[in-house]
Image (cartoon, rainbow, N blue to C red; front, side):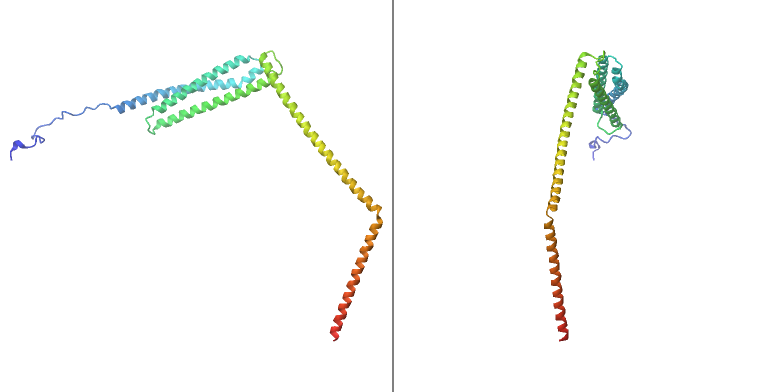
Length: 262
């Protein structure tokens, strides 16, 4: 066989073959995207922790202001200034809650989809946001209830610190309450009148039955002869029954004796 026709793939002995087309190691698009997602996650988490700290302080200050809201009115402080301060604090807290919600949404978007530790961290941040929202709604309900009580009773005395429109509104509320109480008293009076009428009717029925019983007694006393006649008839009937029983017994005894002697 001719040696020149051997395949070129077999290198001669003692020679080193270099791979000219070896691919260099370079970062892929997937690793670049992962690094970018991790950086965005870290930035958003720092932002969320910062917002949570601010919310903690703002909600605590808002809660203290809510607890002193009704007390400040009772001391004669300016109600308009207190309301404006409450509205400003409320707007700040709402803005912080909105920003924290956006940060949580951004962290959810930055997740790669795997069930790693970051998903638990995101769940914890969502729980914190939910707790802040619940506490904020609770404080708002407390302020609303206190404001309703003050609107109802704050202007009853017509104090010098109460505004004119507030005094008029409070007077209207008190008049409305007075009208409701008056209508309730009228309804109770009507019910009491109906009960008294029923009681009077029952008393009349009782007196009527007592009259009937008396009439029956007087009728029995007026006709004693009827009672005597009825008693005589009853005695005569009993005597006839006794005679008939004696005759039947005598006949039966006579028949038995006759049959025995036969």
